[in-house]
Length: 342
Ligand code: KG4
Ligand code: ZN
Image 1 (cartoon, rainbow, N blue to C red):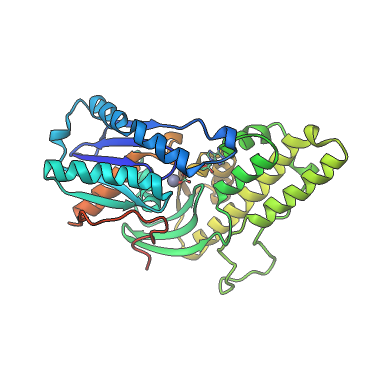
Image 2: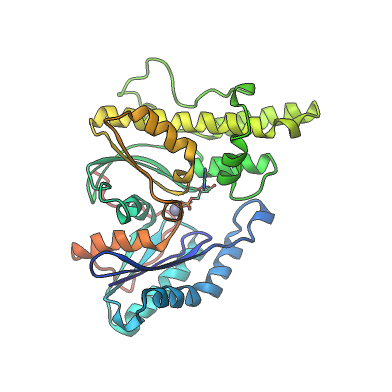
């Protein structure tokens, strides 16, 4: 039985994975005070983590109907993320493992996102193409097997979720921006303010170094310019939903095109999404549409797409199974490199 903790950013989560791999308990406490700042304030986030972590773990154990003494091993996100937040979970898990004399393992946050789909869908087994789209990272991988990841492309500037958050902020919508933009985009007409799709050119070839890479900051600036024009003309308010639709459509088209390039090159028709932006219905619909009938798209349920400890427990189950363990000298790393990149 694995007890996992995830505190890499603003959410505090604990999960219990049973000996047969089933999820027995899972609690996610979301911080709601960041909206007023238009983004996460790290110091505020880590202080709030300290306040709730004990309670979150106790609730997860209660939900699983078990006690901490029955835990066989502990797992925790060791990076990447906000250092102050990471340290809260890491120190909690180190202390518990030391006190109980049980092993523990530090897990890479993006590898955890990669395993989210496998928690609830038996088809999410390698080989597959993975698109991991979160607030801090955007990775396009060919997953040959668990632990062997070919990095095909990544963002050159902002992460996909970060772009949603920044555009929401400049439209005055609040935080997190993704869900707010998605909702407004449904009422908008993207063709009123067409933005070109970043990093997609005619006659781009696989040898080109921008073939799989992505970029979001130019798109964000294009939205900003349009916002300023509309503001000067006094018609921004009426156009917000249209801008959301146009931004989302360009962002989704970029992610979809790059993913389909990976599908073609790897000849692998199975695609697994992960990370908070995987909650975006327009993204899933676009990829599903382009994959066609031979393709398989696996999208984690919303609760498992955004940050959660269940995915950390699932990745830990794999790594502990290989005999891997962390030592008490393990430190949190804000820029921890992804393991298994080949
Ligand atoms: O994976 P995640 O919970 O945290 C990180 O590891 O960063 O992802 C959070 C990100 C935020 O940027 C949020 O705006 C985005 O996921 N997000 C969405 C949607 N729901 C959450 N982006 C687009 N559409 C959504 N429906
Ligand atoms: Zn995440």
